[in-house]
Image 1 (spheres, rainbow, N blue to C red):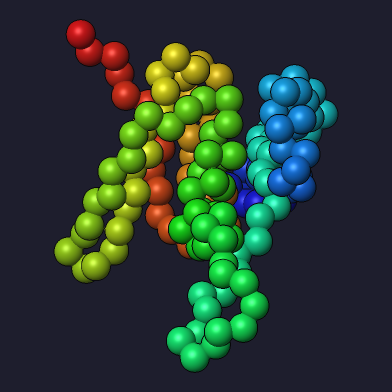
Image 2 (tube, rainbow, N blue to C red; image 1 turned 180 degrees about the vertical axis):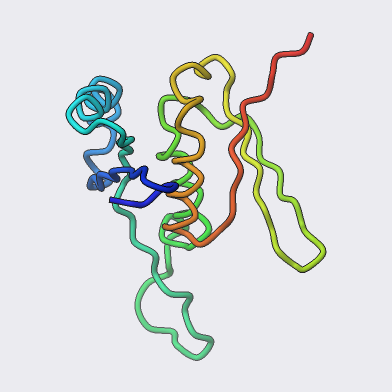
Length: 143
């Protein structure tokens, strides 16, 4: 359970990575049912991923660290899992004067009705799990 804003909370369900595909098939229905059971709380499914430390310069023991276990790859996958029914259509990184970075994530506008009310929840969950600031936006369709 993660505190979102004020009195709102979000429930994060951690799922083993091998069974994530099976959860994706029923995730929309499962989320809807759980949100009925827990009113005023958003439910999010994330894969339980492991980050392996960067190998030290002198150590040549063991195997090479796979890309899927790096910090960057795990944070990218958390972002994908977080917004699952929709897709990420773009990312922008904004560098502030003080050295801070804010990632701006653009989501697919066709699913905007399903996730529009959850954007603040996504933002605070990602901040709590990774320590990175992110802003989710749904671009308006312009012709």
